[in-house]
Length: 274
Image 1: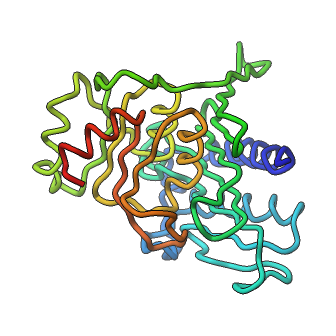
Image 2 (image 1 turned 30 degrees about the vertical axis):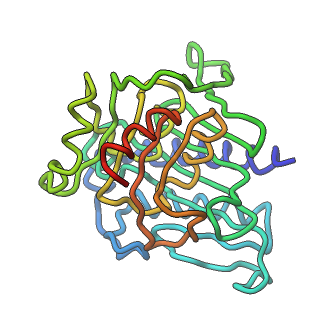
């Protein structure tokens, strides 16, 4: 039912990769060109990616709402706040600090929903700019796609390990200067290895594909960062605990995040008492 949207997302991800790859890690990429709706400074690499998203969606859809960290909330065509059933949640470059510093670990995150609420997302897509894709459709499972020998793509359905509650590899994000270290130190003591990915969307996809056993971010992050990856994890059999039910997606709402299989998420929640 949503194959057209998924193909749109894949084509958009490819075009973004081709475009931002040309300036990644340069002074041009980190040039500040304004302030994003989410409160952060808008870097040139973010705006280039967002412009591609808007252009590609507009080619296929007339009446829709686009919510992006840079642009904010904008209705297109005849869509209005009271009359809209097509919502696109966009983080053009998730991990822009990595991108501007020359660390090749950042992503484009795209989601489609029939309302402005996160539980109504039907399609989620995350593109590692220099690598693989993760995507999911509601009720259809989660897939990872990657190139073999830089030629043909391999598409692999992924399922999370569902029973084990051991945390060998833990993905974690910190507040500036590690201000939340005391809060999460009990969880870190459970893990054998730690990874700070620098991109929430990619970090969650690594959980979905069993590269990481769990992921926690209590800064808290903006909900827009995790809209696509939440569906990716859920369709792979995992859980994204946000602390609140069916959050409304906008550019400012923030929420704590715990992701993993259900046993691991409950184990972490019990320790943190949340």
